[in-house]
Length: 252
Image (cartoon, rainbow, N blue to C red; front, side, top):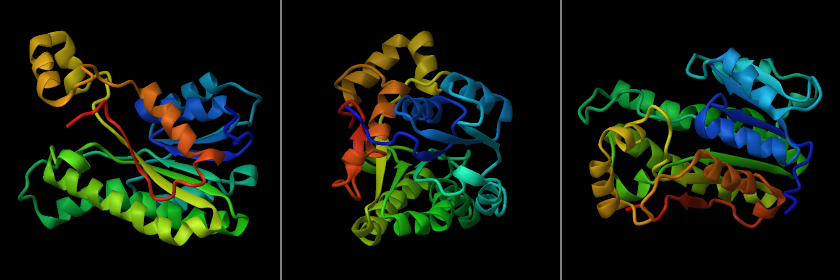
């Protein structure tokens, strides 16, 4: 299937590893030109080498998006063909170590900004050009936890806010063929994460988790998330505004 995104400019945050890296590779395979954003410049250059293509086809931007005015800093570094991305994949997210339900509001706010605020600031800068062109695709990474509410409350509430953000923004953008969606992965087997370690250190406990929570009885792969994200970035997602697409192995 031709996704219709050949030579489209696609910006991916958190692109140096895991799901972000896999999404960047999937988009490049479809002919997109990538703006790769991450804190690790060296890792980004490794990703760019994997993507291939002529020199200058892809752009690496090493930038910590948690810094003040990071969205404006990023925009200032995009010139020429890369100035106005047509596709944005927001792959930042996490609890930032804020696990206490009674953490101060400032800590909750920091988690919200990481999961929702940074993405909104980028959207605010880049979506107007998409509206003018009558074409754009935005994909935010959500989580199964917005359905199960299993996880640290600051993180879960931030992702629930993200889903609401996507739904609300889609009402304003879809009329101009700017399609904003979210991909909500379930348990993905990422190296160094708790469940991946459990697979090696205590497989019986992992099997018990599968018994109660994951009927498919395996963890998902980053590449499986990437092909779904690529579809959401494509011409074929034109009638899917505001969709929260679950890819969670039937998790509960």
